Length: 333
Ligand code: COA
Image (cartoon, rainbow, N blue to C red; front, side):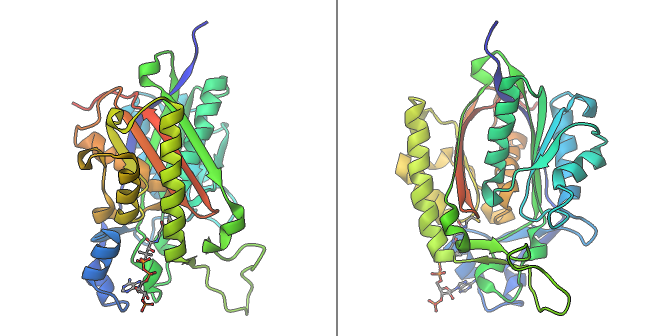
C-alpha cells in the first residue's frame, strides 16, 4: 500500500468590511501613524461588525475553503478551530459552533488553543489525523475577533491587532509533491506571563469585581523571544528536510511585526520577493494571519499547485511553530 500524505487541498478567507486606520487610532490613544508604521509595518486593520463573533468570520472562510476543495460539507469529518477570541470563554469550543453553522454534525470538532501559533498547531493535528487514517478531510480554521479583547486605552497593544479568518481543508494524497512535508510545534509555558488574556480560573470574572478581560503583552520581551525562537525554528525545519531557503517559493509568516518577519527572513537568507506580507492591511490577526496570507497569494494567482511554502508563527503560551507545506490545491484560474 502506498504511503498516505496529508495535503492542503484548498484555502479560503474572510476579512470584515470595517477598517480601523492608524489615523483613527491617533484619535483614540496617544500614538502616531508614523510610529505604528515604523515599529510594526501596520497601516490599517479590520474590525468585526457588532453582530459578528469569531465563528461567523470562521464559517465564511470555511465555506469558501470547502467549495474550493470541490467538497461538500458532508465530506468534512473533523473540524479544528484556532482562536484566542472564541465566541465563548471556554465552552462550547469555537470549532463546535462553526460546525453547527456549517451543518457539519456528528463529527469531532475542537479548538487548538495556542494563540497566534494556533493555525500551525491545528495543521500539525490535522496532518496526524489524516496520515493515521483517523480523518479523510479535516477543516482547519483560524478565526479572530480579537478587537473584543483590546483595551483601547493601551496603545502598546491595541494598535497591533485586527479581526479576520482563514481556513484550509487538509485531505489525503499519495503524491509527495502535494504533501505537507513537515510541521514543528513547541511551547515554553514558564514564560506565559509575556502574553495573556485574563478571566479564567486563575483570576475569574465575578460580579462586583472590577475586571478587564483584555489582552496584555510585554511587547519588547516578546519581540526578542519571537525573533530568537522563530529564527532557530526555521533553520532547524529546513535542515531536517535537507532544504535551503532558495527552494522556498513563499515564506508565509505570522504577521505580528514587519521587523520580526524581516529578521527571520534574513536569518535564513530569503529574498524579499519570497516573503508574503499582509500586515500593512490586516495587522496581526493572530491565528487567522497565516491562512489569510495564503489566501492572498492564492487570489493573486501566485500560488501554484506543488509550490513549497514555509510557515512560521509565535504567540501566547508561549507557543511557536513552523511548517513546510507543498500546496496540494488547484491553481486558481
Ligand atoms: N505609539 C507610540 N508610542 C508607543 C506605542 C504606540 N502605539 N506603543 C508603545 N509606545 C512607546 C512605549 O511607551 C515606549 O516609550 P518609552 O521609551 O517612553 O518608554 C516606546 O514606544 C518603545 O516601546 P517598546 O515596547 O520598547 O517598543 P518596541 O520597539 O518593542 O515595539 C511592539 C513595540 C509591541 C510593536 C513590539 O515590541 C512587538 O511587535 N512585539 C512583539 C509582538 C509579537 O510578536 N507578539 C507575539 C505574537 S502576537
